[in-house]
Amino acid sequence: MSLFKKHEALLDRARTACRERHCWSPFPDMPGKYPNAEAAQAAGLRAFESHLPAAGQRSRFALEQPGTVGVLGEEISPYTQQALNIDYPQADVDVLFEAASVAMSGWAQASIDTRLGVLMEVLDAIYREHLFEVAHAVMHTAGQSYNMAYAGSGVNALDRGIEALVYAEQAMRSVTTQAHWQRPFGKELISLDKTYRLVPRGTAVCFTCASFPTWNAWPSMMASLATGNAVIVKPHPATVLPMAISVRVFRQVLQAAGFDPNLVTLALDSSAEPIGKLLVTHPRTAIVDFTGSVQFGQWVERNAYPALCFTETAGCNTVVLESSDDLDAALRSLATTLCMFSAQMCTSPQNIYVPRQGVRTPAGLVSFDEVARRLANAVEALTADPKKAAMILATIQSAQTLALLDRLSADGQARGAVLLAPKSYPHPEFPQARTSTPLMLKLSTAERAWYAGEKFGPISFVIACDSADDALAQASADVREFGGLTAFLYSDDEDFIARAETAYARAGAQLTINLTGPMPLNFAAAYSDYHVTGLNGAGNASLTNLAFVASRFCITQSRRPRPVG
Image (cartoon, rainbow, N blue to C red):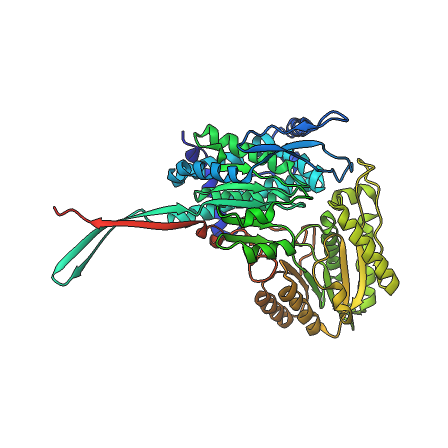
């Protein structure tokens, strides 16, 4: 039985979900729903712990790949604030590119069915054998909670990988392989046989980010590999382990299927000696997938040429509170989203625009100050209990985020603008965890320079505006000027909603309207929600559409006269 046949039924369900955009996933959404959950979770924890050395020692991650010149490893767990002390193989970049080029020759000749089958097997292997291992690795590098690491960096990332395969298949199968063409030229009928061939671009470099290492990486890798390319993975130095595990699985499955494992390799660097610019401008780089900071992402977009470039960075995500049938429900939903993973998500809201005269409700106008106070109270209620805070806030991935919180908090206190001051909370399982509750500041649009642009971490601004129309204008200007992935609106005025839909569409942000209840406002559903529009500075690519995959291969053709008779 071929790997394609093995996974064809699941792939067909995914094709339907992508076409109809309905809710579907082949994976359980919570760890406890996983088959034989208790044993699987225990095995995953053991697998993660097997990577860690004894106290006072260092361990070596087993990854056999060409060009090894040394070892690197600088990861620190946000939960223990202790070094993981794992060494990974550091490779000569030129050797990796050469190995990738050699590996591509056989892979590019493989049929679409063969490549899709192998890559579905990779995702299946991650799910069946490594999901909880990856979840713990994400926890202790990126700092996510266990449930988020399982869901957001585990099964949802797998869904996005399958989704990328669906669009890759759609793009490739749209090109016929053979055609018979004929046309009269004068009195003679010219008859040609034409052959069309899909040719991969070359080697892709996939940059992964510190806070969500797998979520963008797996679909990017799938998009490149499905279309015949090789991939060099460049993880963030702070979160190597999840991607090292991933790369090893890719290599094992590829080799077992009879292909050169050097189709997927790992290129490491350190914070002190980064190699990102070298990889982007390397003459053998054909594709760059980048997820990370706005600053470096914009550099990538300017300097990747002639390589193709797909970016997702971050943005200044906005909220407009114009009116609400249930203001408390709206504020609770907004508070939950402000707290989710300490707002270390590219879709977390930051700038909350409220008319100075207040928000309309069925009970009357609620003043700006009252709205701000009630929102701060809702956030504080979510974070008061350490056990509850641990589930929703998790940890702060980088010490730099704590430094930013300290600076903005001090500045806010000097201005008398602090609605909610941040403080560390005691994590019930990890006493040394790097934690913080959110910082909320109250400002006016006159202080735009202070809140302009993304402030990464649990930081938000409640901003007084001249009117509802001014709030919308300010919010959509943020998206255009600083980039924005998501936007949120509360209004019971259909005319205002229509204007907001048009404004945000032109600015290029995905808009959520009047959503309350248990679903996080910024939840992005694979097979249904498009992630990033490519229309503003938050990124130039969308997960996932045809544009994300179609240009990763080119089409060549040959033609010859059809034999007579």
